[in-house]
Length: 492
Image (cartoon, rainbow, N blue to C red; front, side, top):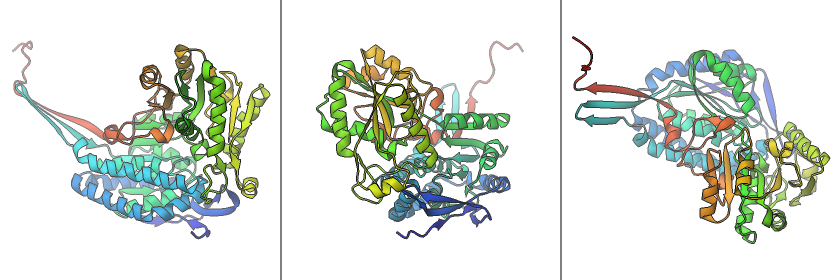
């Protein structure tokens, strides 16, 4: 792949839109290298994109489901063909190793294919014939969707919104993160080519663009993945027009390791390490705090360090031996390093993990050596805050009740995991406050696009993936036809 910078553009009404002002996106593995340039759209551009989507909605919403599916399948085919180059570009602009970028493309296409294959059945009218009448429940499209996606999984967290929105008959305006704008723009461009004018629109920009996308009265639904604090601002921005919302927000996901977990199970231990450090720990559903039964704590830590040192190899994303790349941006490095420094100041022990296999790259880019934090307090920031980076604390617990209490002691509730004998693990899992709890696996390894995904508490509203992910882009319109509509208790 050429290292020449890529220049991407906005797409409004199926036309590419250039801007005078642009932002550069550096390669996190080598910040002196510019991966590409993205436009800085104005609020007026956002209005134009919303208007185009609104104009297209009246006709697109009437298009038969069969045609929507056919168009989606054509886009999927083109994305599959383009995957090798798209994955390389994603690694350059994001910092994740190439295998991880290819994996993200794979998960994205898996969901798009599943949505396309199930949409006709999931979104069909539900006709209920009864002795006392008939009821028809129609799944009608909502309207214009504003989709705002984050930088950590920019492709999958955009297509998770695009596919169901379009299949349900909505139109869409997408705004990616400025920390990973390039590849997702290429993906959106490929999808837009297969749909009528105005159905798929793409804008970039600062907070003013985001405000327009979340407050404009022509926007009927907001689909946002990102931080909880940003979501609060979005909810306020949308309040005046009472918009439909799907919000997938932060998580501080707990992993509970029970007394009957086999610490000598190398594969299970490897899965847990990957659940902490895949994508350099920058995944909303990563396991961010590990609670281990006190009876196996010391042995667990020993075996965990062994597994981590075998799997973690830090270096340039294009080195085939690398499993952990750089952090995405300098601000995130500063934030994570601040948590580690604070933990040390409180008396925690910080143990470096893995091997740095390219010291030159490590000194140049936004790299951090993954680390394990021991002896932290249960309420220390390293435990209570979402690190979103390559460090994880391990803490002991005394019994199941204690473990469940620790896991639930959080404003978040996105995912969690329980490790141990299956029936015991399921019993503990049923008491955890989370949208998803995985047994003997965690994070992306336990993700299944056939089932709903989302959080409780301040980890979000609504669900993506599964049937619910499609149904969240329609409104139920009930048509009731009673045979005897007169109520007997109303007088003549």
